[in-house]
Amino acid sequence: MSVKPPPPDIVIGRLPIYLRALDSLAKENNDITSSYELGERLGISSAQIRKDLSHFGDFGKQGTGYNIRFLIDQLRDILKVNREWHVVILGAGHVGLALANYHDFTNHGFKLVGIFDNDSEKIRHAAGNLTIKDTKLAPDVIRQHDVKIAMIATPGAVAQDIADMLVGAGVQSILCYAPTTLIVPEDVHIQYIDPVTKLQHMTYYINT
Amino acid sequence: MSVKPPPPDIVIGRLPIYLRALDSLAKENNDITSSYELGERLGISSAQIRKDLSHFGDFGKQGTGYNIRFLIDQLRDILKVNREWHVVILGAGHVGLALANYHDFTNHGFKLVGIFDNDSEKIRHAAGNLTIKDTKLAPDVIRQHDVKIAMIATPGAVAQDIADMLVGAGVQSILCYAPTTLIVPEDVHIQYIDPVTKLQHMTYYINT
Image (cartoon, rainbow over all chains, first blue to last red):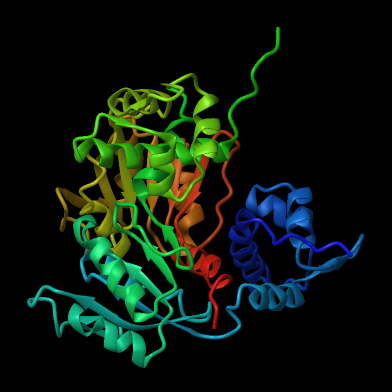
């Protein structure tokens, strides 16, 4: 019996993008879509979409397309966002405040339960629906709320210390907005959000 | 004679990440690095790094590693960030203001030349070193400053109209923070920054 290899990480990374597009299609009152329609929306080939989804099962019949609601439920299951994850934000500068005020976490599997800064002038101020707390309190909040996911929006120079603290408190996934590369244990996942690297990716293609 | 195929987009996307790591190594007063050291920092295999770089030339000698300064210069050349690109921000909400205050664009090839909003209460207020202007003025500023790159930080509902305006004014690259998928001509490049899809990518791996 052959064992199916785990789906490549790059495929996992595309599933949330498919989910986002399916959510839009559902909001526009569609019931059925096709890999072709999804591909047109996302700039991804329909063959790629079919191949990606085939790692996880058989979600549509040849010629009849995908049931949008069903596929959304399946993808939410696979990505484990058919539940609510508690999330904390470290750093209450412009980026941290933007995240605290971002309305799109709710209904996509995430609930913000804390925002922290070490600047006494920021502590106790409001940030979205939260109140900024002292960074020292973060480990307690993480343990109390069983937080597995954190977003780092601190300056680059302190991001590694913050990451060490988060991992020590039980965080397994870090979304890092600090312009640096973090070193974490192998079982901790990191994603980076860095506008500079995104812009530099595109300048390659600019015709001048 | 065989013609070399163009490097895959996914390889292009990793070059700015290598550049970021090399910049850090240079700041730490290193002269020489290896694909192994880079790989350790980035969580990418050294074989992958060597393969990626080999698309663009021969940057190191077997056994002696890479000259960091030389490799930085080469990557900046390849990515066309050995010059200054003018960039505009559309939308002066929390994300737009975070971008206007982000210090890391300078010295990485980018200069912010405008931030725009259609909210009269925001217009004429300061945002970083800029003054928020009426969105109606964006096409003029884009043409005056020969802007090829824009960042969209508007609500999702208006992002497509904004993108159409930008493309009409000559923008070739769009970094989109709005939680939506934009439709643009084939010669326009888009990158998305969406914390929700990044978080959903990581929840897949969380052990509960």
